[in-house]
Amino acid sequence: MSLKFFHIFFIALAIICTFGFAAWTAWAQVDGLGTRISGICSGVLGVPLTIYGYWFVTKKAKQLIV
Image (cartoon, rainbow, N blue to C red):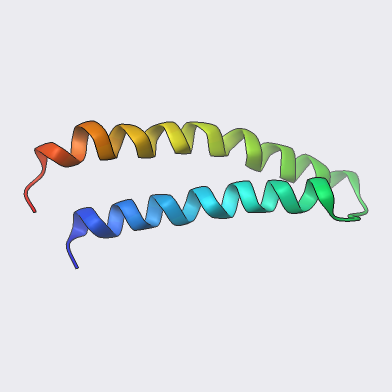
């Protein structure tokens, strides 16, 4: 497994986890303000992570050696 593939896989996994946690806190019957705030922060941080993943796959990964 190349380092480039591992990086893409890790970024995709991070995106799934951040948006998954945000969705879980939004739809589950979760008590506590801290958990709700954590979910909102997770969803907000998932957006730049997605933008970075897109940028890496389309621009940066093409410049790297396999």
